[in-house]
Length: 106
Image (cartoon, rainbow, N blue to C red):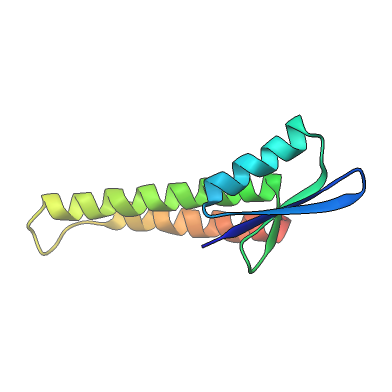
């Protein structure tokens, strides 16, 4: 999914498209920190994020992916039909609550 990075340099709007979230984040940070662009945002086509918001969204997604992979690996290692996944479920719930809370505060 392409991501667009937008910012202003000398009151002129500029935009670039990156194929990955990491690429978009790197360009946004470069523009903001190195080039001193103003109002740098990253858009996924649905929502526009500040650099802070996007970094939080990326971190939360990485946590969710890690939890999902850990749960899948745990299930594969056991052949029991009654595998206890309650720890993974609790972690997924905590993650969902954190995401909802973050969206409310942003």
